[in-house]
Image 1: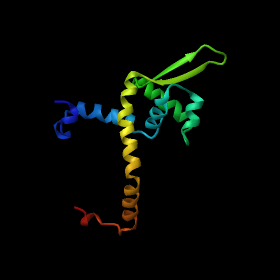
Image 2: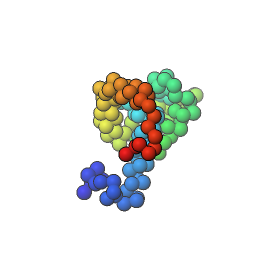
Image 3: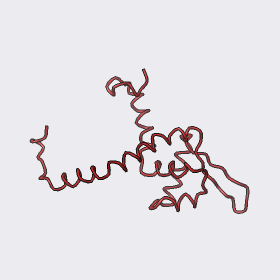
Image 4: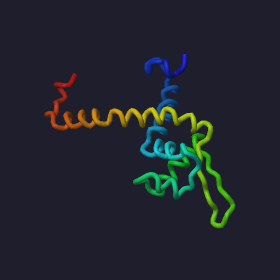
Length: 133
């Protein structure tokens, strides 16, 4: 039985840790943006930075290193002066595009409902711990 068909309670501690680490990687603030930006082909660092509003140079560097370490992004250095560095999805990274695209589509489709739920939650009186079930 694959992990996707197991209940969390039936997973070993090691399986849970592995899945959590993978979900932490792709679910962090910037990884999905980077993977989505690389779907049209390789990009140089500065082009990637310009395409992702709000990301700092340091955070882009750290996230790219993590994606590279996980085998999702490939870094190519060209021997020019100054050196040019280009980032591209690996074969494994390409397999992440389908679920990432599905998440983006879901977010676009349900953003109004989520915002409505947030608004209702924010105006509702705070519940006390004893009244929660």
